[in-house]
Amino acid sequence: MATFHLPDLGEGLSDAEVLKWHVAVGEQVLVDQALVSVETAKAVVEVPAPQSGRISLLHVAAGQRLATGTPLVDFADEPGAADTVVGRMPTHGMRFATDLMPEAPAAAVQRIQAVPAARALARSLGVELSTLKGSGSGGVITLEDVIAAGLPAAAQSAGRGSTMRPATPLPARALTGEVQELRSLRRAMAQSMTLSRDSVMECTVFDDADLHSWGQGGDYTARVLRAIASACRLEPGLNAWFDSGTQARQLFTQVDVGLAVDTQDGLLVPVMRNVGTLDAAQLRCELQRLKDAALNRTVKSEELRHFTFMLSNFGMLAGRYATPVVVPPAVAILGTGRARADVVAVADRVEIHQRMPLSLTFDHRVVTGGEAVRFLGALIRDLELPQ
Image (tube, rainbow, N blue to C red):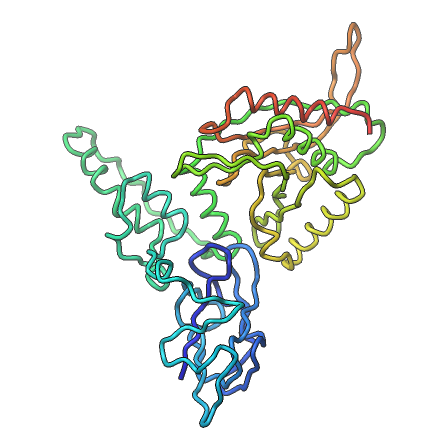
């Protein structure tokens, strides 16, 4: 018998959720045949069979989570079986090595399993992950494990010598409601927001773009994307990544914008590549394709990674200004609110102009206030040009 373990699916995450098995115990499968659909933090991925053979055991059921590297499925030994595409048939406990799912190097296998947000919090609290025992699936260290290890001493120290009286407990009330475990996109959002809270020094500036020169109508999102590319050329420091561990930033010439898309299951951020090279028609076409793929959950995993700037167009729903959240390693995000007719002073008279509210959040550890407002000014100048 040979055991196939959940491989690293290229998401940089420690676990996945089994959505649907495509095979059953006793079934004969072929190499590259889809075994199971799993969901990582954002994408649904089909895991293919690393070899041909008969399924003897499914280690997890649909709906369960498992850590990368834990047993997924067993293949039965077949009498007289020949060597497979991966060479000889591995013995029990070995992992398959294929071009699709390469064997992790020894250093990676020994790496402590922890969710990304737990790693960031452990660094800030000075907690050594090697001293913790993970309570998550497969022994993964969770945020709760780090909090339990890092905060009790501080809490005890703060409590010594306190003269405050305990608060009077409120009378108990019978509350009813549905308890929902955070899964899939909502789980990923919780981890990303926690990482941002613990890692980023956020600052937000606000302003408005006067769209009076547009005339009637206008493609708001396409124009905003064009303006982002224009502003990034002037202030490339906002089209960047920051590594707090090495205290280094990486500036990019290509502008890859992560577009926050609100779905029924939670937030997805597909990435529009190289927006500065696309004309208006191409921007509209690619924007619609990514939105449809996000809403239908067909967006590819590689289309959810490596954005260099972020855009949240919440004004399509409601709201004028906000403090959108920067997700590291990116250093900036633009929020666009609902455009509406405003009363504005023009020379010695009053006019009604269409204006778009803008909210720019940046990581103040690496982006200066001057860079941020110059970026916002360049973006506004581009938006205020006639169509």
